[in-house]
Length: 380
Image (cartoon, rainbow, N blue to C red; front, side, top):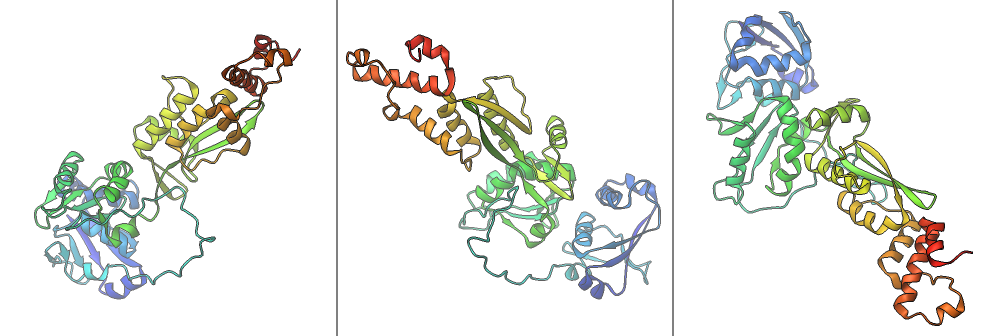
């Protein structure tokens, strides 16, 4: 036995975003495959062990999520008519679904360029406009429902393959592909959210945007501080309030998300791999394991190399001015300051030899100290 008893004043309660729901169930019903998603959803809110009857106050979005998980199941009743299950019509619960839509938000006031700041960690940017009916994404952090593009759309075959690869199941009554597993949903969004928007040109429903407002995509942050003749470079995943050990635990366990402080930060595998590669290159250690936050000492002779590495993983990185000066000199040897050579020696050097001496002098000043001085016979 499993019944969800809804209040007769549902319309007014939905407008207040506070709907009182009574749930009656026999724990043995949890073994029914068609009811399992609903029981999993309830366990997250009732805790364990859940007792019957249970009383919950749900918002519109929460009840909408729950009804979608229990689609076409005869488990919803009015509390004053507990013997008559509410009918389903083409995937909607009669007398209920139409009252759970979110009211349209007013247009936000335009922000000045100075006041606008990018979110951190980031969310995906809007994707391209493609002719035809695109992929439509609905759902929340608990489940996803995909409506495939029209067959003439250029991404139809790829979208179908994507849904099958990631264990989506086709619901023939509404032709939507469902993923009803929170762990799989968050891992899928971490890996595919950018691709859905940028490659597939997917449309995300207002319901999805509302339900995923607390999800963020982690990005890589880089900072450099001058330290002696070099720089201490720190590479880290931006994960909001999530602690580094929680992020590390997620990465070690193959989980592409971390929860902390009420937010959920998604850890895109491609971003994590770029971070790992950059850390290995800066450390000169091909066996290094990725760390959520790592500081590496970069000596002056490697600044030009480090520039290329950091540009691939943190394109917004802006190094200190002195870094820019030193790396520019290494990339363009003709801009190096001349070495303080004795006049007799300088007079017999060819132009390319003077450039070579200037390069060694640059390394001596910023990195290698007395070793290079001894080789050149300078500084004595």
